[in-house]
Length: 390
Image (cartoon, rainbow, N blue to C red; front, side, top):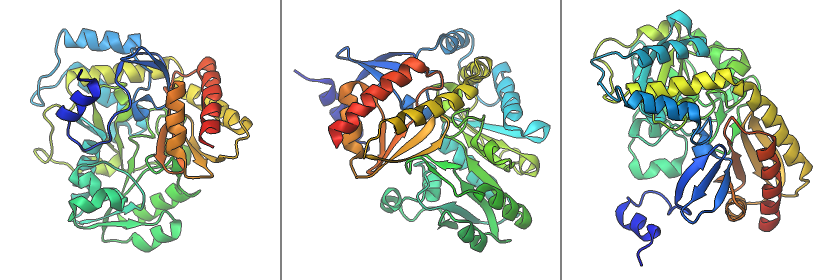
């Protein structure tokens, strides 16, 4: 008998590892596979399902919108598109001087950021960080500081330079020839690794001094996940642009580049566009998700639940847990041995979804709606997974 695994292998491009389960439905912080097994989802589609699964607010908004307009192309405006752009200007702090470009993914938001950088005084140098991740399109991959992901596709975009994540390296790299500095406030794909203390403040000072765009990749760290609407707000600075996606629409594909101040005047008519970007279905979904995050106090919930998770992890007293990194509900569990995949596999067998970001890091990114019961269940299951992998 042909299984779903066989059908997947025969029909899907072999660019990713074979999936371990076939998921068929979800509700809240849980998903079920085709065998009827329930899993506590502490990855949330890699920080995408901000409201968990099948949240009634999102279901209602998408159902209502698809019954009227799903797509109209960028030759026309729609009420939900304008509303979302205004909302993003407000919650990001960009204000009336801000502008928004809509695409369909985080990678597209980064592509827009690269083009924005090229419009900065004709400069072509872009500085990014080692071990950062910005996407897999040719432009976003050029910024990604992971050689293993890049090598098969080189040569990539010229003019991109990768530096160490230190203030000293930053000071040596930024001068009047640089178009933009692009950084993640927290390196999610690297295992939830924070930048050194004071890094973003130093970056803001140096880039402003040299007329360099400071572009922040908030694709994974944004939309309340780190305990603020966007992670840069924890540092007290204002960037020139932020790339957002993932949690913005709770699973409906959308990405955006939000610009601040003088950066908002760089793009001119006809210099960029997207057929599907900002369509009424995706923007209606995003308005519903962001509105519910605000209404339900889910940003504060990320702060409270993040501290609960840290306390729960500390109380496990496992020799495998070396450190806990990150902020809010984006946490990285640094392991004392290279057994992250064993931990992740053991957790899955127990009914818990977590992610082995690398050999020594487990990434946790549960839905922003997570509560006491789910954290208690996580504590039990993750403790067992650590024991099983030891």
